[in-house]
Amino acid sequence: MDKDLKLKGLINRQWLTEWDTVKYDEQYRRKPSPHFYMFSIKASTLKRLSKVYPRTADGSRGQDSGIQRKHDPIRSTDIKKYVHGGFPWSELSAKQKSNSENDNLKMPGWLPTAIIANILTPGTKRGNEELKGEHSIQVEDIDKNICQLTLPHTIHNEDWDPEVAPIEIIDGQHRLWAFDKDEDFDGDFEFPVIAFYDLDITWQAYLFYTINIKPKKINASLAFDLYPILRVQEWLEHSAEGNKVYKETRAQELTELLWSHNKSPWYKKINMLGDSKGGLVTQAAFIRSLLASFIKGNGNQSIGGLFGSKIETVDKEFVLNWNRPQQAAFLILIWSNLLKNISKSDNVWTKLLREENGQQSLEGIANDDSAFTSKYSLLSTDQGVRGVLHIYNDLCYINARSLHLETFVWKDELKEDFIDIEDVNKALNDFSKTDLENFIDNISKVISNFNWVTSSTPKLSDSQRKNQMVFKGSSGYKELRSQLLQELIKSEVADVKKSAEKVLRILNY
Image (cartoon, rainbow, N blue to C red; front, side, top):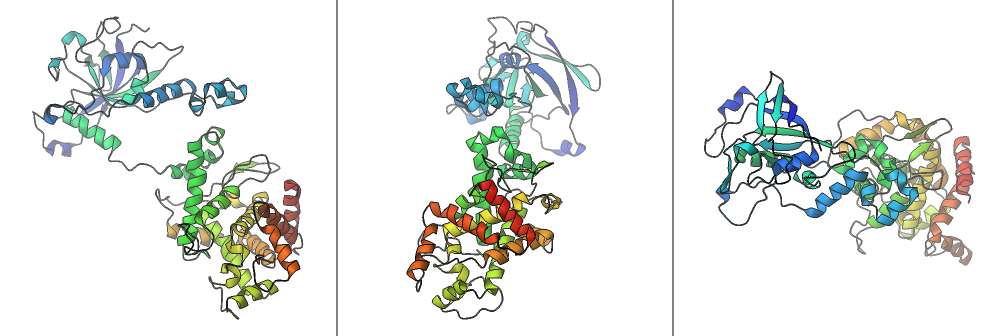
């Protein structure tokens, strides 16, 4: 154990002249020092020097010195596990840790954020006790920028147990409680500390509030937009929390946007509540389809999700840096384009569905085209939604490089808590009249000719009904995906034809 009792630190000055006008009170909030100290100290030493004072239910609140949350042993234990093996190793069971295939999940357990503390002066009272001089820390300003801390000479004695410890922890107590006061590491583990000196307890409470309560918590989904590489990190893939943050949460965000954006063909048409009167395909089904297509990882196949996996090309591997507004805009683009082409179509299947719903003609691109929204249209079913999403994802994924998808770069500030409608409109404008939109249109022209009627559609012959029944049930997903790709092979556009052939080979259908 390190016996050195002297620590060097930095003096950090934070004091504005206008703060002199703040109302101070010698009894409850004395005027603080115009600076604080920054230093590094061994975790075990800091643990010996400090005490956490949890609030108590008894006694006068005015005299209560506690500003900390109640110690949560489970939380501290989790931090301790993290320190020794990082994340997600710390969450594995003993059996999983013994499996050598999981060795690559072990990471450094860094805790780089500073502990916020207060150094007490001799005579400071806590309850009925006071800090003794021999237990105090001496702080000396060596020059304008450097300070020296001299620790109590008895700090390393086995009987060290002062009634009042010389350091109070303002923030970071659970990190500290993860360590034993006598713990000795094989290596070094020091905490960065920001320490105020003789800070009144009221100011400590104020600091705790502004650090932990006042700031708005960052939307975790934002991290995956700021750092898209997080979407494909193996250590997050092994974490249920990581998957939920990006995959499930993102799928729900995108589904809600498709339902709420007035340019979306699905505007107010997704059954968000799951009841029999709420709309067409359910929110849950839409989310599952996005998870199976655009937001899936690479898995065992070479075709991953455009929004959720690495895109692998012959000479390059990259992650598409599109954020939430861009992803939402792309989904609106593909569905709008498909609806546009269906609305122009006079194929037998479109006429059948329109006649069944009493619509003999259409004017423009109608969001209520029965060929799209009829209860007899596969497009308004779970199978149809997944089939469409698979097709556009698969073909755009394998052409991501030639379509220059990575060149659609977002330069504006991102909203943290929601997908902004105006941002989506901006992204839609960015996609407009590009090679990408042209490629989408060529796909849509082909699959709009596909027979999208369900097997329950009236006036079908027995053979027609039998042909459409193959799309029912769980096996219907694969069958519809396969038949759509077979339809795309008939395209007169070379890029579409070759792309469909390549996807079929990869999927081994």
